[in-house]
Image (cartoon, rainbow, N blue to C red; front, side):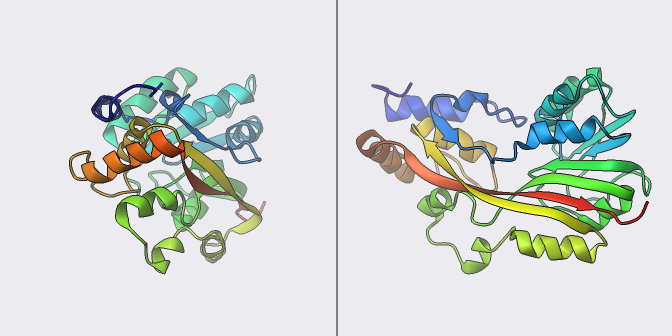
Amino acid sequence: MAANRSFEDLVAEGAAVPTEGWDFSWFEGRATEARPSWGYARSAGERLARAEAALDVQTGGGEVLDFALAAAEPARPALLAATEGWPPNVAKATALLRPRGVVVVAAADDAPLPFAEAAFDLVLSRHPVVPHWKEIARVLRPGGTYFAQHVGPASVFELVEYFLGPQPETARRGRDPERERAEAQAAGLEVVELRAERLRMEFRDIAAVVHFLRKVVWMVPGFTVEAYEPQLRALHERIEKEGPFVAHSTRHLFDARRPGR
């Protein structure tokens, strides 16, 4: 807990925590984020239990896929693959997922998917940097499904704008779910369901803020403790005086299908 700990001590802790993978257990007790009502990982497990060949795109450290596979047991696809573009995450995902029979392939986030056309009847992704709709549609079999949770527009912008100031409207409209719906349809996919939610977040100490911005690097590009020390110190004092810093994440759920049988 942050009680009676100095700014310097908390910042040093937040700067020292490893950032590989998508395990957020370190934040327990010092930051919270409400979860979407649809329960993505468990729902993905239900899809995996019925799939023959599945691909998880931009798997991170493999933690979400690992949870989904556990939820699917004892059923599982005969073929399981995952892609990841960041080398530290490739190593972490391989160590975690190989015992489950998942082939982890190193592939840049913006590169074509290294698989044959119509290779999978299920493609999953949780928080892809950019959804490559044409590639997703290409690797899906006719009748196959893309099931994914995306980050929505202006997500955690209270924190972003605290450090960077007011953002242009174009930045606020990024990751718009309706635009992504149109892009998915243009790639030949049928959008079966699209749901969106705005969710409360709380940062209870400055260490949590530092670790979050180091881990989710696109929030404040180029973030370092040294570059933003005055803002961090002021935010630390604000949290100490007023309580948790409140922000809101945005998420949307895609259930899309490649037409055909």
